[in-house]
View 1 (cartoon, rainbow, N blue to C red):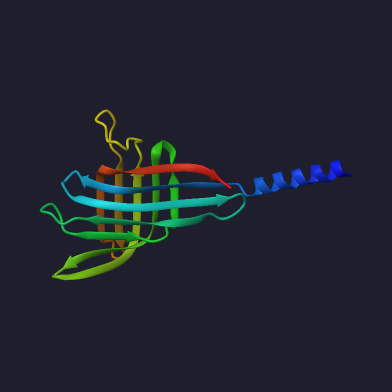
View 2 (view 1 turned 90 degrees about the vertical axis):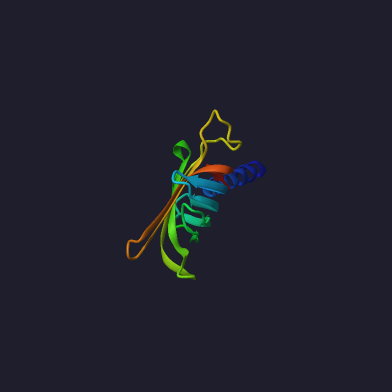
Length: 169
């Protein structure tokens, strides 16, 4: 009887552990980047999609990209709250999107418009930016309800971004 009870306990524990299998995919990063036309920006983001067996995915995270004012472009701030889409990780690429806002200065006043933020980050596994390996890439786009767009497509020159896929319990 004790053997049966012990076997049943081990079986229940194993079933419970298997039932709590969660796949997490996403990306996080902090740093600065420069576009091909000389615009500079700083970024900070962390996004993840967690999917448990047989359940709908849960999304977490946020993004903030600040394009610094210089002779190549004006100051712009793009922010995204919790993402509604996270995909990828093959080849170190992660795509994500969600509702967000764009703030810029217009006629001396800050103007904020709401819309959709989409991003693609490419993790080239080179956090020390050695000359033998290409740097990470970040592209952040914003579109509002009038189809007005803003895109920052930059090469990371300080900081790092990481794309991951992992199993959690």
